Image 1 (cartoon, rainbow, N blue to C red):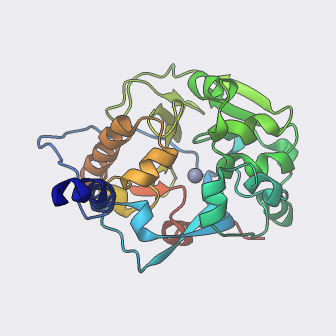
Image 2 (image 1 turned 45 degrees about the vertical axis):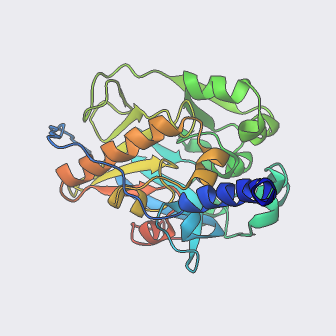
Length: 309
Ligand SMILES: [Zn+2]
């Protein structure tokens, strides 16, 4: 008789155990034999890359990657990366905009209940303070179209928003993850193609300026049209902007995926994300000095060149 009473008790306990176990440290297996040829890049001497930090959220490291601590709070930075090139200035993502309070209210209740955010000067205001005319931007390239990457677009009216067809369809298809991207009104979307051939082991790419300085590759996983942007600066430095493929750099360093609850909340295809995390881990090892920039790792952003007023 007793064992029948135990069963209903054990089921939720087992569930809790399974849930908890997804937070325990577990690195992803990395196959041996990875080789890649670093493509040429001829960035013009005037090219610069600058971080524009624009907003913060706070979360425990445990929610960012498997093995992260519940006792350690991490700053999840928001912001934009500005690339100034003689043929035009680009932003990657847009940080928290002036109306972030209203934008935050478009997110799932669970996020609103468990998250806190803080504002910093908006990307538009920081561009203005640095004497950069936002209306002259070539465009804002979205690593993907989630709310925390599009919030600042509202402050850059008319600026082209450069997306690939898969992300545009993801926005149009509806659903909560892109509610804000649809709700911001008439954005000036421009679609780019991946016409530039293979790049660093990726099958397709889009070489924005044709000189290898800014190359986008499709990286579907976090969202269907997520990208990774490879940027080469004249000092020989190489950067990989990986968006939300990982939330903190340990994701690529270890490599380790997000815990189950985070994957379920934010990743469109966790299997594709897992494969890409391993691939970026291999790439980071194969390309000495490559700086992998997760969109939300404020420690990495603090070490980047900053836009100065
Ligand atoms: Zn994000």
